[in-house]
Image (tube, rainbow, N blue to C red; front, side, top):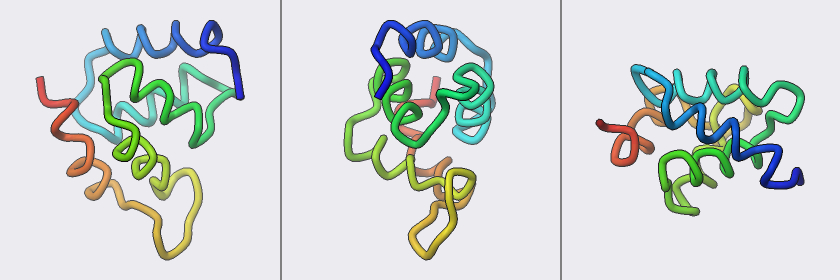
Amino acid sequence: MYAPSLLDPAAETLRLADFTGATDVAREARTLLGERFSSVTFMYVLMRAFEVEYNAARDASRWHEFHGGPRALSDADLETLLAPWLDR
């Protein structure tokens, strides 16, 4: 796990970014975090940037662009899951 000091700037940038939905947020997080991007760091920046509750952030970490499998979330699932925190 990375120290918060390495992830907090990305969370702040993400919080201030203009986006159109959860998949945009996830892809922007991937760009901002670069090699540090993982399902765990994505959870962290979601919780820091948008105050996403832990269980929802954990579920969001199952987004299909992290890994596949029968429990992977589609783009539509991710949008629905994170909508309560991302609606501005």
